[in-house]
Image 1 (spheres, one colour):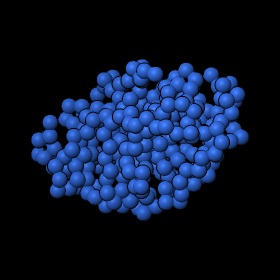
Image 2 (cartoon, chains in turn blue, green; image 1 turned 45 degrees about the vertical axis):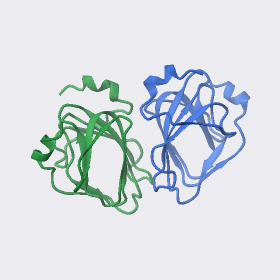
Image 3 (cartoon, helix red, strand yellow; image 1 turned 30 degrees about the vertical axis):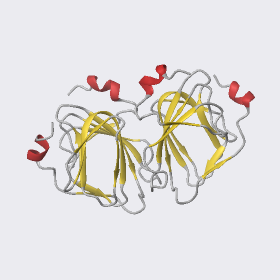
Image 4 (cartoon, each protein chain N blue to C red; image 1 turned 90 degrees about the vertical axis):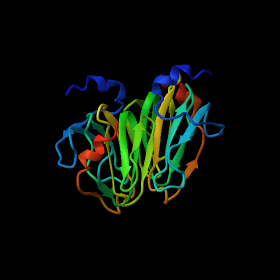
Length: 135
Length: 135
């Protein structure tokens, strides 16, 4: 898939394409600070229709949406639509997913909070039926 | 001064204009997460020619440049020119300043690292003669 229509969303370099069973499609990851630093920051770019699986961060996470259109959902709550400029504070241990809308690229920064507490725990994929209801 | 020419750099809302003796000109601050949270994140917009005074962060700081052109300098080192996409990891306790170039707006995100260790300590203004040598 071409990334030509993404250029207006790109502030930080796209980074490496990630092959992972924890993402439903193509995703690019660029760590902006070292993953083992006191403040790991990364830039993630999701192709349209790509989301990650349900997961938790032991220490919490902050998302800063910088381009495109996507979603964030916490377990048991409605999905929240995200656009450039939106901020999500993910509580410690909260089960959640995030990613692109079906018809739009989505780019966000992430900041791992309290990384000394623990890492990411990956869980089951998001129900395709539920995701497909999000426009 | 008009902010019209800044529009292409704005992802996060400009926030409040700050009146502070620690900045040499007009600056706008928008806290994206609470200042007393485990991961304080803010968006700072400097008008052309505006920089902050020398200062330190007890726990360190990360800067993510998102628009315009500016500078970061650590005490005893040459100033580093910053553009959108540049990242600065400021060590714990390192004396430094940052801000806009003389002829350009500058916008960056900041992340306070290890905020539980301590806060920002403001020191003397940057020498006008030294700053004016930066183009």
